Length: 473
Image (cartoon, rainbow, N blue to C red; front, side, top):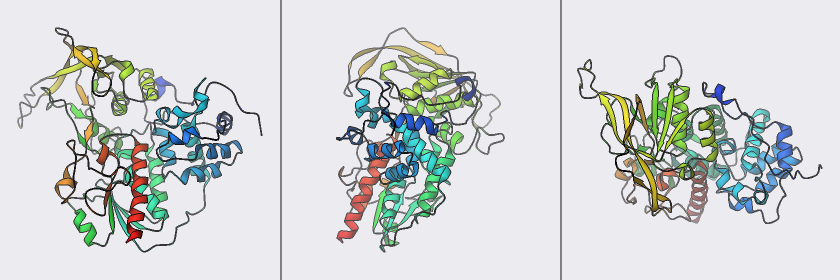
């Protein structure tokens, strides 16, 4: 075997040039070649105490899969990852490895950590391109479980239970399985064919997916138990958008990031003659600083906007989005207006709209400049307004991306299900068990909007607890 690669830097990720990719919806990063993957794998020291594994919410045996990559056994590497993760091609693309597994990597002490996420993506893509054998379906154990929501937590829970022989049915409210992976994350970051491949793998394991079923409307949780399910996992996500409560939010051209991205990602509004269009704005302001805000801003640019702003009330160091996503947005020409906070959205009446003449169109967004004061409860310095510093950005579209909350429908239609003040379902952290016997929950429905990998971790935790619960009966 070749000598270890002691380079202090990762192999860079090949990608489309910024001035090309900002005009198309093709995937930005094009992935490692085999040579790059082998070279990057040789940077791993295969530490005995495996600190990287402790940083992974689903506890992938990282040194073991990288060792297989070193040997050129890419399928063996995939099988090791699959023991812990039901969505390796997804995680390799969207997980914040820099704050999780890679943050624990010993190589990061005196240089850059091993590109664990890039290697995971390579391995998953290699498997999807080369695997031809049928998935081995485990023998049935005779028990049935219902999973609500086909996002990362629901798919993970379903996959883990199916591997144990459970008959699992996933109920999805939308017409396509994948949850936030298909409606929230843009095509240029996560191609939908990748998500469909992961869903198809679960179906091959025997998981049934029922779309267009709204739990709480079409069927209730009580009725699921009456249908013979012995346990229910709630992974319904956090699809209820938050707004700022400032004047002008009802104007035409104001979107929640949730709606804006769903129209583009799920309904393909970027295609010619879409069934669910988006206003083709020339100047767009996206309010917020997280990954979703970056996704919305970069989507607006690809939809043809001439100017796109990120408006965020804190500074660059406080941006909650992944560093890579911020860098990509800047490279693509997004204008970051940091330490600014919107105070109202400006508009004019539409005299031709007889139905609602007061529902006008956006003409601008008024902001006030901020400075950072003392730390708040989160530990970040609190933004404070600078009196008299108001100014107006000339825009014809505003996208609000300041967070989401769990939809209250399931709580309002399920007796005995306790939620916190933010609408998140209250669970036992060790098991995912709710206040209702046999009902488990995880992901954004519990925590509010968080990361894909944390949702997957919650799905794994609940699957293990559901198995123990049913077997103990």
